[in-house]
Image (cartoon, rainbow, N blue to C red; front, side, top):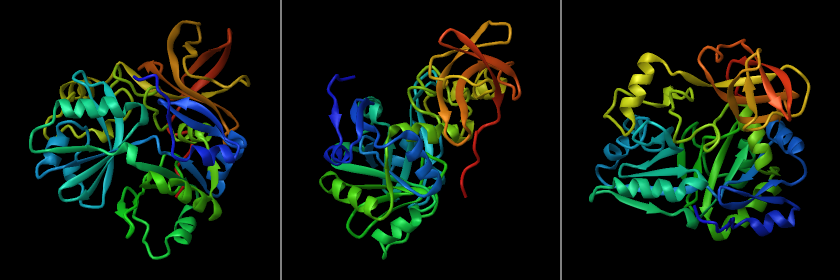
Length: 359
């Protein structure tokens, strides 16, 4: 990966609002404006707006592009009609996750892939390596600014800015009359949408969403929000060494369709069951927040894994985390321990997610 830090087209607006910027996925991005707690509460209670300009936009076109994508991705794009999208994953030959992404069918002949920021070069290189002559791949990641508006008030905010447009249904996509792209997924568990527009007008729309009532939110709140829902973070909870079956994402792997890269590993794991599973963990003892890479122990003090994600949940007021644990310890209700700065704190494995999605 390049050591060059990339900058969002909204960076000047972030700095004007007093945001603290940090490196993330090769980009300089806001981690918070006021506080993670207040920004988290805004999304759960009203609406927040996140800069997602670091996410990649890759357009795939061609008469047979769906058949080709189905050989690269775990989910079945053949089930989508125009205007629909789905969560899916791109795997390596051994079934490990290269990236998790959203695929949107924007026309009969074209699909948009929204991919993770740090994986843009690798994803594009992997696709080009397997690209047939009749398929066209366009990486337009540098051309788009992106915003995610999340929270109970997100629909009201949408209609303030786009009174003549209809918000697409869940997992839907539409293009506005002006050419902007609106997607309906989300990474917080709340109602919301993603908005992509040309980079040069990104700051204008960012300010417009704020004026319409959205609170600017940073990566800190995005992490606490997504972990309360047990949504995985690529590079932490997902990696080339872990399969979707181990991550509990088998629902997004259609093993009945045309075989895709990594298919055989997933088929065997599904049949036999994985030896380790990505497990939700809630702290029992009061103590410092759990963080990635903290050691997970059994009650006798034996190491059984390490945390892939961990935060203090603003909603639950306790530490929450995820870790890959041996199947015997991944059973719901198992008491374990987390080593935090040399001290052991009791925790328990729980059912995913920590919170139920907002309706």
